Image (cartoon, rainbow, N blue to C red; front, side):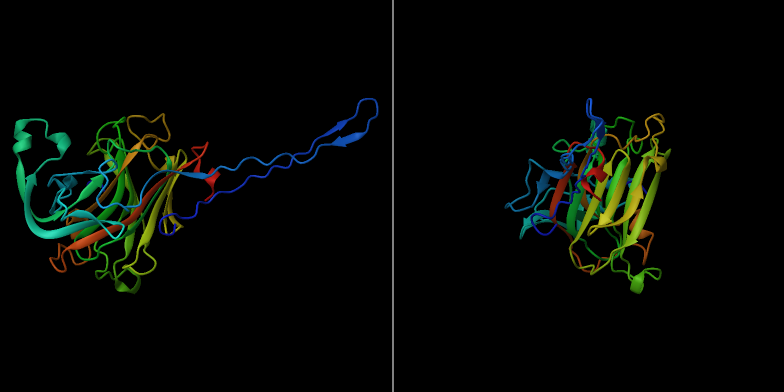
Length: 330
């Protein structure tokens, strides 16, 4: 979200590599042809669940998630303050609920990493909405694998839910030199859209941010219509290895990116950079900002608040013995 499985355990896909070997030799002193029997099949690579949250507890698990508390909005001119209040994020019926509310909130104008001195900490701003942003920063991060999130998204002009990732360590420099992975973003779902199916906004975005530190950064974004009912839960998945990233919705791929399509200005000799490092996960619901306010009916509608983003589960898998997800099946 840069500038500018069936419920409770799904099917894991794997394929089996069968090897049948044969070799021929001439027996000593006889010249007879001998043929070996079939070789033993290789043990198949499989997906292994390494981290998950099914949201079955009574409260948000503090060992897995931290709240961002600020009104910064990522430099996107967003209109919400993020809080850690239970009004903005809570567990209900086995789901994480992130709720944006129409209410004036005052808070830090800068993110935590920029509040390094008194003057920065004293900068405050008041905005017309509140919401929540949860991250696994400092608690869990991953390099390669399958990241899958089942969620139901809010609708309305100005809504901007996102499932995305940032680097655990800025090995290649500050944003966006060390990369950003947007697994799912959507803006203004359900609003009028002349170019969309049935004239209703249903576009899902999958995006990479990379290059150099701002303003020498760039991005690649792929979009797809969300098939099915906007009111339903859908599963958003990223398969990520050293040679590619594949974005899918409900098991259907809609975008693929490879090292040939991205780069890191500071490390041109490392073809997978900057996406060869560990990244942590972020879930949030923004209100307003440059992206949604510049599309559809423009601006932010104050109708039908609160808005909710519901997350049924989050699951992270590793492909055993391999950094190539193809070894676990497509």
